[in-house]
Image 1 (spheres, rainbow, N blue to C red):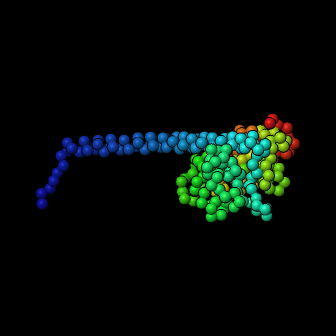
Image 2 (cartoon, rainbow, N blue to C red):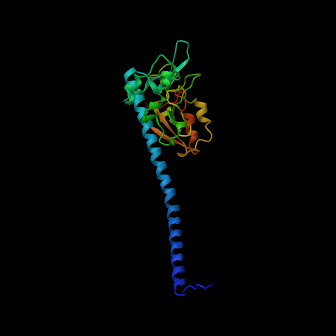
Length: 247
């Protein structure tokens, strides 16, 4: 059998080509490693900014509701037996340019009735989470919940009845109305919110892509709360602690 011998002149060229390819591969790897974290951070910042804007829109709608009815909406509507029917998020629809959707609800029936449950898929964009993965499990769910004291009704949004701003004795800037928490979602029509003490006990508060939560104060201002400043929530969860603040 004849022996095929490689030309010695070709070996160096082949070796140089392989070395060049290795250098290119290493450079590409380093570029990817440098770019990916920046891309991820940029994406997180953009989603956090979108979450903030949606929470501000909800705050503006709450103020417009108050301007119309001289009080905020109740955290949820109840029937004659005192059973919760649906959330304040439904009542806010006409003030979010969603009057047509609002009129599709049967306001005499609970959110889980066949008629009203069919409207879950029509959740307005303003209630959707910018951090949503788009999975079927997250459809019709929102990260925006009111802070509601169902026992002593000391929060800005009260169960079953609205509160006028003049009754917020601590000042609107010192009282939280709602939060945006991308890691905890609820059906947007369901009368489910978060109790003040449960908000304080959120553990961990920063284990999500946003590394914290956003809060909507009574004056419409949105603030970020992470692990480092979560203690600030203590003075914000109630609105009748007789603290002096600007309204």
